Length: 206
Image (cartoon, rainbow, N blue to C red; front, top):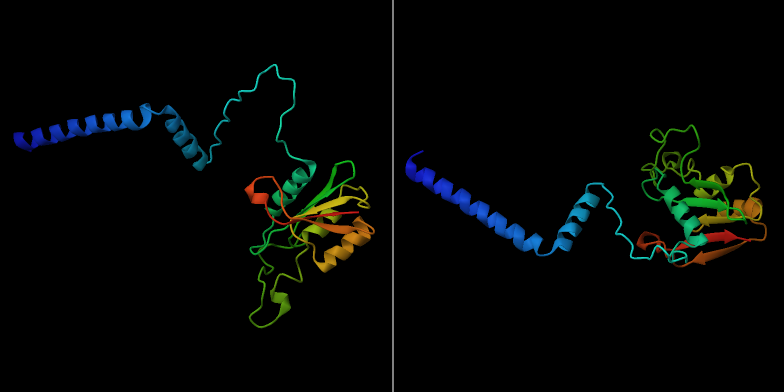
């Protein structure tokens, strides 16, 4: 490299450093909130939970926090969380059985019976040769039944069952027989536990 090329490279490096410094000062230093929001966003994308903004609430304020979950939203959220355990590639359903005193008695999701491999039995909705044994339907236990069977040795009679989807006819019969005699099914059109839960849900109660 001759002296002319060396001079050009040095000049380009200096100009690049100056341009970077000016850009950094213009885009970030003039608006520190924007910089913090970008850092928080990048941390969230990398799996790091950003710290919560410090509340402006007075430490001497004796009132309780507003905007907390109602009991219905809380138990329905647990049903949705349980549904995330399902291995069914087409439909994930969760259920949460709750006592009249607000105690969780059992939770469940749709899946194969205990001891049955999730990898050996089929998850298909249809069979190419029309054989029902090549589909999931003869093997899957529904979330409602699993929640009732998973109760912690407490009676399910007269209790409430939160389900993320409307029960099928077979589950409805079991719910009426075991859980809620003379029960009625109420369809909740909307929840307020975040946008992911704002969809149709059911609460089964007597």
